[in-house]
Amino acid sequence: MAHIHIIENEQGDAIDCNYFCSDSCNRTHSKETYQGWYGCVEVEFDDVCINCGNLVKGVYASVDEYYREKEEGWRMKKLKLELLDSGAKAIIIIALVWLFAFVLLMLSLVI
Image 1 (cartoon, rainbow, N blue to C red):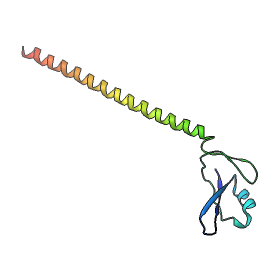
Image 2 (image 1 turned 90 degrees about the horizontal axis):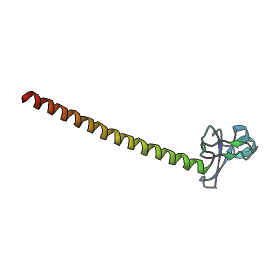
Image 3 (image 1 turned 30 degrees about the vertical axis):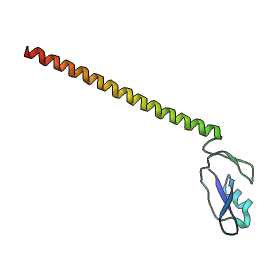
Image 4 (image 1 turned 120 degrees about the vertical axis):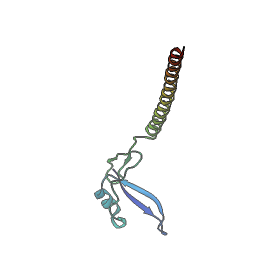
């Protein structure tokens, strides 16, 4: 989890941010501009603490991993839809077979 220090311009607009591995690194590096605890934030990708150089672990190790996981998710959704589609077709076929058998049974009782 990252600790973030937001850098603002004279108008108070956020223009950049720094990532830290801990609140103490944020306090040490930011000194007068420290704006209070802003930690326990998930960042998308791995980064480096600009104070001590420790790894700030992101949700994804790299952009490639992010897209690979996203693609995997789409493949799984597509597979689930295909399975549902084939399952629905199988249920319809079974229902038609049972209906045909029922009709044949009724005809044999009438004749």
